[in-house]
Length: 245
Image (cartoon, rainbow, N blue to C red; front, side):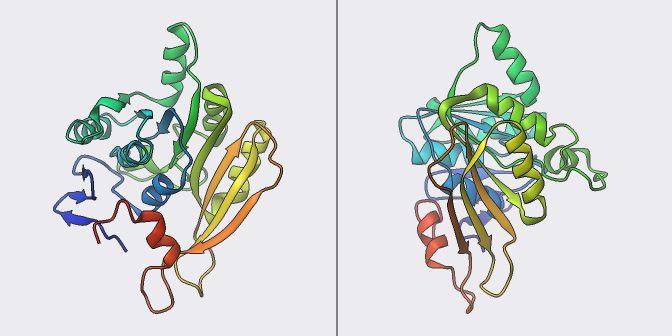
């Protein structure tokens, strides 16, 4: 499905390369979709940045933005820092090796909470399943270190009044995640159900939340591949600036 060039443990996109040999969660379709779909702004926060993929995508899309990525896994954070340092966006992207909870506490002690115009997160999504023996994959995939409630609580503190929080969630987590957002005082503003192929049910949902009630919910459906296996027009247009072919 990818149209980036993979060489060993790295992916080459049009304007940057993502090395991932020390990251538990590799470059995946979800991250690419979110990085290409989310709205931006002058200040952007990427929660659980992993390889730094989404932070780099947002830096490419929004040329005047400053981006901060936070990552609890030290090895992943160090690799993200290296990926950023090797890119043309190094001056505008900062990676912090810290949990989201600690990051919120840290910046509070520094004399104020920065307001981000855009917050993006491809979050740990398994709240009620068995954990993986691989501790790094557990950190990346399970909500044991960052529950939905904690995620929305932090976003509420960090998001500007007119800002947007964007994420991507598996279909079986959708109702629980949206409900948690509502409990935290957020309104769902955009939703895109993403099918892999036309005959299948949606496998993932791109979601956007805001602090203000929208006039209308932007509710759509898209697919990655056509029935013949070719890339859909929607997917091609969305990722055109990133995929090499």
